[in-house]
Image (cartoon, rainbow, N blue to C red; front, side, top):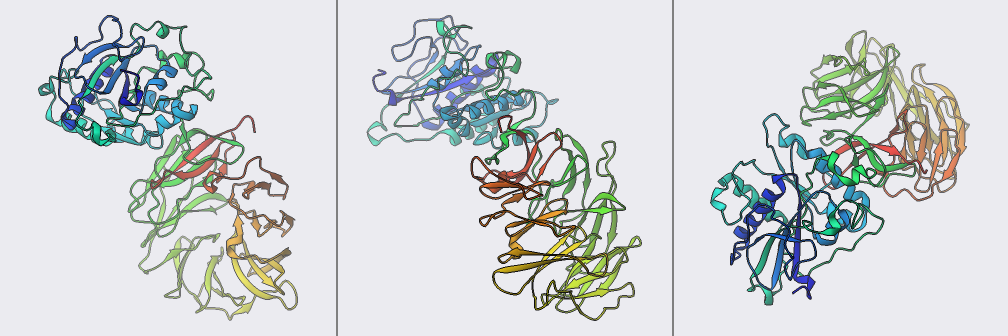
Length: 620
């Protein structure tokens, strides 16, 4: 019978106690309902029986629990006893379905990560897995709270209702409540995939429900395959995939031999809430995340992460009324959340307020300001200011909170505890406010204006050029308290100039750099103290620059480092070639914690972004 192995598909259900047997029976029942397979015979009792010689079509150590039908094609739904021997499972499984409860979901997630971390066929099984989740006790978390845990680990997660009915025998479908039958039919609809050739369509398959390892001498501890041994078996691949249903990995973590024998394949403790990043990280970090944030609620805005005083701050929940959340950068623990009443009109910004880090954000009608960012005892209550002007947007980079509308030539600056209205010039772009409540605007011509406390505009003045005959180019942006503008005299050289927005645009430094530096070529570090401008690293306090090489193009920055596709540099311009090119800019950290975790912002295809705190690579 086994001469044509392509005619068999195997479902391996690895379960704790009765869960494995129940899962096998429910899957078989749903397969029968979906495919209309004929039942020709009923096998021995529904619980695992004493070891018997394997059937002619089986392999050593396989004990039949149910034999439901016979035919040219064969579907095997198998359960496995403890201990687990992963090489055996991989050798016999065609696809993985994880059956677990909300109480044991961490154990199931850990096993999926183990499969994925092994690579090869094991990783392929994990990537195509479907998680079947049930809530067996009201005291356990709701399934909706657990489903996100498997995002990025499995193809999909489905919730089925808990049932105390005896449902291990597919021939007794009347004992299964209608709601449970409907849910399991949905599971089969998702994982069932019919690729039967036309000449096999009328043949009757045989369905076996088996105990995969009962009576197998190689399945005893210390014999047979070593869990996660170096040899990686190759799974057989069939011509047809009538039902692709495999392992339900729900055995208690402490009882799993591969954990007792040395932990996960990458040598880390499996007790944490770790996950694998959906993108390849840059050199220096592994794909394994120490912690992962909830989904970032960005709406139509770029997902933003602000890092200050040991906290990572972002927005979660509903994008139309998000929560500002602070997480510990050490372990991802939630320190506090603060609701925002309305949709944000721009990403939150990190500023210095009264010489302390603060976060500012704005909706269409309110400005929010949070201080005491590192508080773990209570959520900081934001100060809120309401306004009636329409179309106001938070100006990025301003040292003092500033809202502006270029359409109405109006700005609102936070001064003396209130929002003060200012007029802005036609043709000028509001770029910053100072501590005196003045709003500074700049035009592409190099002219600038100040609207004072009385709301009066000064006459336009020309920014001091870095050299005689220089022509103004792009207003690159405000970093800290410095406005950076490029000037040029020819197409081969750019003169950069820094102006102090807190001191009436006094020129503080100039720097000459090769080539043309556009807005897209100017990247500022999160702390606002340095930047990459074209092919140089630039100190924004002094204007000192260091050449990074003619081919440099920044793909990402953290506090003290910047990356191109092939190199990494620090703020002094000391550049090192990477062992491997950057595969994905999302794998570049937006910040590095004091313990070396690299925080990246990444998402599954089409899914929401999350923060992944990647572990440092000890071999880097």
